[in-house]
Image (cartoon, rainbow over all chains, first blue to last red; front, side):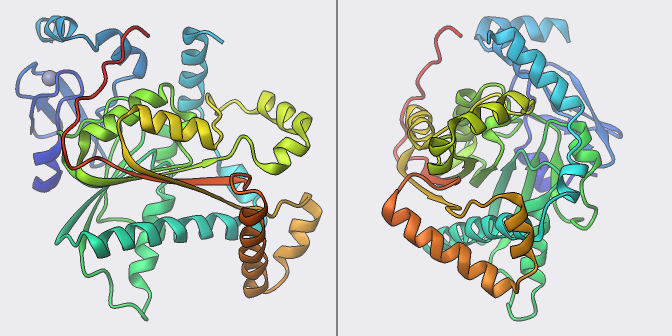
Length: 67
Length: 277
Ligand SMILES: [Zn+2]
C-alpha cells in the first residue's frame, strides 16, 4: 500500500499525468502505462537516456499511443 | 567521453552498485566524518524549519541509496533528550539502483521509497519543501537535468541541500597525480565538481541565495586515520572541528567536502530550456 499522501504527489514519469493505485501496480490515468509496486516500492524508473530522447512535447504524444 | 559511453558506464554501475565491502572497510574515523556530514545536513534542515515552520514537512532524498540519511533521521528522533521533531516529516527517498535498494536497512518503516532517477522525478510540480542530494550528483548521468527536476518539484522558497566531494580540495591540488589515478579507478563517478562548477550548475538551474562551504580539511594517510579511530570520539571530533576552522580561514574553498544550499525563488522564473544535448 502506498500512502494517500504520497499517491497525491506521484505522477507518471512518462507523461507527467496523475497515477492511480491498482492492486499490484500504479497506472497512469492518461497514458495507462503500468508501473509495478515491489515490496511497497513503486518502480517509476525511466532511464535518463530515455528521458533525453523523449523530452520534447511531440514525443510525449507518441508515448501515449505506444501505451 | 561521449554520451553513449557515459550512459553505458551509468547503466553498469546502477545494476552492480554493491558498496557493502566498502562500508565494512571504513575506519571509525571515516565513519565519524560521514556522521558529521549527516549532522551538518540535519542542522541546515532544522534551521530552515525554524524560519519556515511547516506542520507537515515534505522532504525528498534524491539518491537515497541504502537509506543512510533516513536511518540517521530515525536515530535523531529517537534520542531521549529530544522531544522529537515538532514538525511531522514526510520522508520520500528516491533511488534508481535496485542493488542499493535491496541493501537498504529495514529499520525505517515509516519512510516512503520510490525507484526512480533524479533526471525524471515522478512527483508533481511544487510538491516538496526540501530536497537533499547527498553525495549523489557526481553519480548522475545528467546533473543539469537533475537540478531542473529538483527546481520543478520544490515549492517556492523550498530549499535544496547538495553535498559532494570537492574535486579541487587543497590536497588534491597538492598531489594531483594521486587524484588522477584515483579517478581512473573510480567507476561510479561520471562527473567531478569543484566549488565553482557546482555553484555554476545550480545558478544555471535558476536557484537563488546559493551558499557553498567546504569542510573536511583534515586528510591523513590511512595508517594515521586508523590510529585516530582508537582515540575517544570527543578528541576525533575536536580534531575535525579545529582543522575545519583553520582550513576554511586559510583556504576557503579547499576542504575535501562541499555543502551547498540554495532556494527556489518565491517569484516564479521561467526554466531555461535545455536546447540540444
Ligand atoms: Zn503517463
